[in-house]
Image 1 (tube, rainbow, N blue to C red):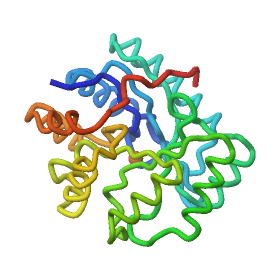
Image 2 (cartoon, rainbow, N blue to C red):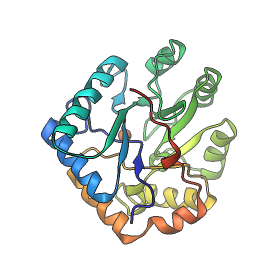
Image 3 (spheres, protein in one colour):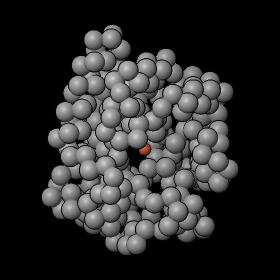
Length: 235
Ligand SMILES: [Fe+2]
């Protein structure tokens, strides 16, 4: 029922952000993803100056340990790691230092505040692209400050941003505003990637139900979803 087998957004490295708290939970979530139909995942811990200062090295190391544990459990999943970068000074510092864990070939997964329009969003996106990365906005449908979708999303697209929508948004897991914006983007054909953004069990159950309900079918008809085209890197 799952129309692709690659996920590119989750929080499964134990204990380094607000996702899985320990290895047992990580393995349970991986198991669930396998049952849903996933075979390859890029897991993406938060990197945020204020709360999650995860270094690239710490993420790589966490991924290595997770991969080993999954293998020991007989979970058949190709696992790599990148990060979900909060748009702040720390991100720009890492961009300038070329210290970015990318998704696939050069995609930089970033998020912003849910409530207030980030200062210098366009300039920062420009900076990211000028440094050779491909700006990939995590869950554009979840930003409450977006009041004029056509203008906001359209402008970002002009600047080269591509969008990763959370599958759970379509079923209303994040509320009505996110659901409406997810469908708005789907109608436009502006979605490039679909993500699980999995943090914990409840989201896994919601995801399983959403996929089983077939709600992705019409979305796939209108959007060129590139999940399965992602190249896997070493990290
Ligand atoms: Fe996330």
